[in-house]
Length: 99
Length: 374
Ligand SMILES: Cc1cc2nc3c(=O)[nH]c(=O)nc-3n(C[C@H](O)[C@H](O)[C@H](O)COP(=O)(O)OP(=O)(O)OC[C@H]3O[C@@H](n4cnc5c(N)ncnc54)[C@H](O)[C@@H]3O)c2cc1C
Ligand code: FES
Image (tube, rainbow over all chains, first blue to last red; front, side, top):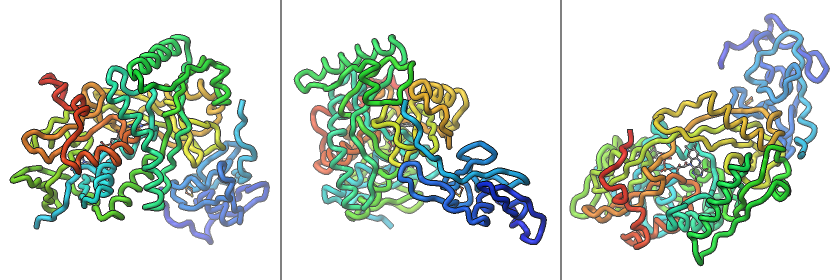
C-alpha cells in the first residue's frame, strides 16, 4: 500500500481529469492527482448528496471513488496515476432506477 | 491485587455487552472482560438483522423471547442514544423473506402457518405476499421473485454502533469494559467468583459467562455447560447507493449509509473466518435474482465470521447449580436478542434467578449426547 514519496522534480505523467490534462509526479495516486488538480469535491454521497473528496488516502474511507477509464466507483487512492488515464469525478448523476 | 465489582461478565461481544449494560442499568457496577482482537468475534462480523419471523418453530418460548426483544429494541436504541449520543441505526419497518420458486413459497407458507399456530392466543402477525403485493413493498424486485412472507416484527440495526453504544453506556453508568483481558481460569469460593486474566484477578459475587465460542472451555469451571460450536457465515457489502430497500429481507438489507449488505450463508465444520468465492458467488447470484439492479452495483468487501451455535440452534441460558451466582448466556442471534438481554436477562441476573419458563433454555436438554465445540 505504501510507496516512497514521489519526487516532485522527477518524471511526470499526464492524466485527464474531467477533460483537462493534469501533470502529476509519476507514481502518485489518482487521489493525489485529484487534489493536485483541485478537482474537489470529487463525488457526492449517494444517500445524503453531501460533497466528498479523498480523505484517508489509504483505502479505508471509500470517499475517493471516481470513474477511471470508464470504470465507475474505483478507489482513487489505491490506483497509481498513469499516462493518458481518464478520470471522471462527476458524482453518480442519478440514483439507480427503480424498476 | 484483586479488583472488585458487583458482577463479572466474561465476553465483550453483543451478548456480554448487552448484559453488562443491563446490569449497570440495574444499579450494579459490572466489569466486562474481553479477550480482544485475536478472538473469533461474531459481534464484529454479523449481518445486523433484528429478525423474528422465522425464529422458534417447535420452541414457543424462543419465539416469544425473540419477539419480546424486537418489541424492546426501540427502547434500547432510544436509551443508548440519550445516554451515549450514539445512534445505532435501529429501524423496525417489518421484514420480508423473498421466495424465488413456488417450492420455496410453499414451504415458507407452511412454516409461517405453523409459527402462528404454536403462538396460540398470543397471535402472530404475518402475511404471505404474492409477487404484486411484494412489489409494492419492494419496488426493485426482479422477474424471478415469486412472492414472500412479511411480518411487522422484523427490523435491523448497525451491530458495530450497537456494540460501541453498549460499551459507552456501560461506562457512563459506572461499569467497566476491560479489553485484552482473556479469562484463563474461573473459580468460586464462599460465593465470590474469581476470574484470572493477564491483567490480574477480578472478583465479584455474580458471574455471567457470555464469551461466545470461548465459553465452551470455561463453563465447567463454574458448573455450567455451554456446548457451542462455530458455523461460518459470509457477507458481501456493496458501494453506497441511493435508498433502494425500504425494509430488510432475510438476505439483503441496506444500511443508513447506503451500503447494501448481502448475507445468510451457513457452513458447518469450519473453524476459520476465511471467505471464499463459491459462497460469495451464490450470495451475489441470489441477490441479483432478487434485485436485478444490484448487478450494476460494485462490491466493496466480503468477509466471513463464525456464528456461535448450540446443538439445536436455540439459546443457552442457565444458572449454575453448584455455584448459584453464575449464569450462562449464549445465542445464535445476538443482535436480535440484544434488547432482551439488556432490559430483561440482566434483571434476572441482578435478582439472582432465572424465571421458570427459562427451563427450556437449560443445557440439560442436550443430555450427555452433546457435540463439543472443536
Ligand atoms: C455472518 C453472521 C451473520 C449474523 N447475522 C446475524 C443477524 O443478522 N442477526 C442476529 O441477531 N445475529 C446475527 N448473527 C449472530 C450474532 O452475531 C451472534 O449471535 C452474536 O454476535 C454473538 O455474540 P456473543 O457476544 O455471544 O459472541 P462474540 O461476538 O463472538 O463475542 C464473544 C466475546 O468473548 C470474548 N472472549 C472469548 N473467550 C474469552 C475469554 N476466555 N475471556 C474473555 N473474553 C473472551 C471474545 O473476545 C469476544 O469478544 C450473525 C453471525 C454471523 C457470524
Ligand atoms: S481516500 Fe479513503 S479510501 Fe481512498
